[in-house]
Image (tube, rainbow, N blue to C red):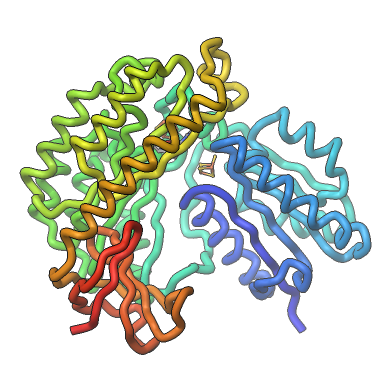
Length: 437
Ligand code: SAH
Ligand code: SF4
Ligand code: F3S
């Protein structure tokens, strides 16, 4: 009987992708993936620190492992990810959770097999955290979540230092891979059955190959890959989004007509204090250009409510913004103080009650807009990449349109992984319903 591992992943696609690599390395060591933490021999928690809520969820999950770990000397608990890149958190961990076996960070995931071996051989606690890395990891094994779609990291880290954000401190300085190594990875994935790739980076638009080629060059190169059907990317920072990239939407048939373009706030004043380096007019100008070039583009965004000093007037600029852009979807967040970030020190923090009240108003307006946008799809025929069986109805399948809209429809499981035509027959706020043609 082989040993089993179980990974619990918090946070963004970066972390999901890191977990795929950790899983891949463990499988190379002879471990098998297991859905149940209690039946596994090793449990890894890959943490996120983007908001306080993420930290709390991690502590909750970790607490649940204590009894099993203390009762079973052969059970290994490992913790990694963005939380572990913060000294004050690691200190707290060692005090409150001394039974955790392995602690490592975001800059040395490729070292995990060695750390695990040391822990097992010496029966000792292991902690290794690096403050940054020089080279990006290449060609790590991967246990992919999906057979036919895959994330591909193109940059690591972030240099933007938005004043609210912890990521530049947990992921280090921005580093780009070379176009050649990215393209060879995509070709390998396509040969393995992948139809859709999503390029990942905190700001893909600042990607720069060691030869000086940029993100748009990468898109044009990727579009030439035979057998690949869809290209997506995230996240696009508005400050670095070029006209060439907008034109690539028209030129590259594989580039999906979808963009995630976080605005964070509709107020120029707040954007300045967030250090976002664009203002309201510039953002709206970009959206106008994209919509002119790609009339059927779908746009999603991230919005923070209750950033320090946000006035009622600033907030109403955000409400106006969403009405003007008419987002297809928006992820809304209550501002959360992150220790070590500039905004965490600002003394004009917004009271929780006001934050929540604004959050509810924003959500209400956004839901109306997304429902209206979805209704426009009724009657249209959309190409859908079938992703799996619906959680709500076992005889239905779910998939994504090019514009990243979730569609459910009746169909057989053998269609999973295929791109098929679906007529949209009904629209809900967060999804569409269709019928196969
Ligand atoms: N690199 C991406 C975002 C990564 S974090 C970008 O620049 O768009 C994902 C989202 O979390 C951010 O877009 C932001 O909206 C939100 N976020 C980050 N820090 C936050 C904080 N301290 N409080 C609330 N939301 C935050
Ligand atoms: Fe955070 Fe800003 Fe970097 Fe995004 S661009 S990861 S929000 S600092
Ligand atoms: Fe969280 Fe780290 Fe991603 S803080 S959002 S897991 S980069």
